Length: 587
Ligand SMILES: CCCCCCCCCCCCC/C=C/[C@@H](O)[C@H](COP(=O)(O)O)NC(=O)CCCCCCCCCCCCCCC
Ligand SMILES: Nc1ncnc2c1ncn2[C@@H]1O[C@H](COP(=O)(O)OP(=O)(O)O)[C@@H](O)[C@H]1O
Ligand SMILES: [Ca+2]
Image (cartoon, rainbow, N blue to C red; front, side, top):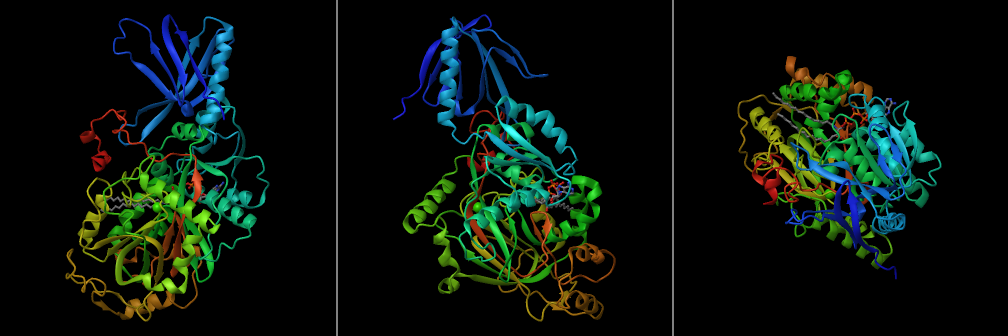
């Protein structure tokens, strides 16, 4: 058995004397001064020590080392308030110690390095980095080279950097090239870039395991490589929802110390073919239309979503559909329980135990999920039919700066379930209220035309023979719709729209380009409205409307640890009541 590293001695920081202690999981130092009556100690978990260097080392404005033989410098993670959000910003802390002798200095550096290896075994040595130079505000390259690369260098991480020249280059690289020697893959970009990495890594892992991604009943193999995200995109939802802030330095530090956050992934199938994977937003109706519209305005950068969101809202659409879902165990958690999935979440930990227990019992990590798709359990499916403003499925909260608590504030990152949000057709002001609540702590599910279900799988199809009907423009809509009434609110066929819709329903799927050219906003200027929307799958338009989705628990791992509750750590800099971003949820 390995013996516990313990070291304690007097050290100097400038002209002040400190008592420094390395024991168990912590390294701490306390000023030895009569005035320091309350014995203020700085304590750093060994796992959060970024690096230990001999001499007096500076890294800004550039790295310099003053090679003195009695000094050593410790770099560590320091937390600061992020201002508006509850997650905490991480910064590089630095302290230079002087020892009475060189022997003691060498003892300190040796012991600290040994402790570091023991307490954070997932630190990467070698990373494969993909930079999308065109994501978000087109600052990916600058962000990586000025903020991230110097930290990786300090931590002794070697990286192979690929600046992409086309879409899907990163995905193809991961599917085909030799990945030996890499501990993780880092993407510098937005949710679209993350999605490429996700597809590449999941695909590669299944190829090597000899598993078919097309079959929704197959228990997919979890990916061995970790994914790091340096946010440089438009929405950056995956980063925000797993770290709590959009900040390149914070994310780089999570990568360096080898944090590990498992993440649920949803596979989306049409008939028996895999279409895509999704982690954040799989949305039909409003979110599909916003994406289709926004593609025409890419030049606007991140603003394209606000512009298109407003235009699509004004076009006032709803769509008919049949949604079937397989509910998750209601005893484990609920999307309305007003808890939040934070760092160290107990619901997710129990889920890990459950998955591993099944794995040791049956030999396959996810084989317990098999039965859910067998014909015996078909009875468990629930089916609803009607007209929807939007149908959304998310495997996690999907919080982002636009919506700091997200699409489903109580969703869990790694519990093996997703939240299905059904927004039935309603009055435009009702829908605006629903959207607006995403920007505050007000419960967007507490509206009579909204339902949320925690699910393991979802099917969506179009009602047969209904596809030529359009919504009748009556003043009869209201927020409080009865159980029996909502669903089939009166619909009517119109001559003009029949022709328009028939064009879209000839049985041939349109290409993405055709879809983007579809006049989504025709509702603004004429009465024609398409019968179908499109699916927005993490920012990509799907080419099919009728789909089957299945959640795969903890299929990938990120270099992250979930959102740290700033208020709970007394580090947020704000009182609970003053933190707008939902700390109050945990009261
Ligand atoms: C009235 C204000 C309403 C604000 C409503 C905010 C809801 C935001 C939910 C966002 C969930 C985000 C899930 C993440 C999706 C991303 O994977 C994906 C790709 O991101 P990438 O381009 O960075 O690669 N992003 C998206 O698909 C973008 C979806 C964004 C929808 C934003 C809609 C803004 C709506 C503004 C409506 C305004 C109505 C005003 C009426 C007068
Ligand atoms: N070099 C490139 N040229 C064009 N598109 C790219 C390139 N690299 C990546 N992409 C694609 O750009 C899309 C958007 O990238 P992303 O980084 O998510 O930015 P944003 O958040 O602004 O959408 C992704 O779907 C990705 O596949
Ligand atoms: Ca989940």
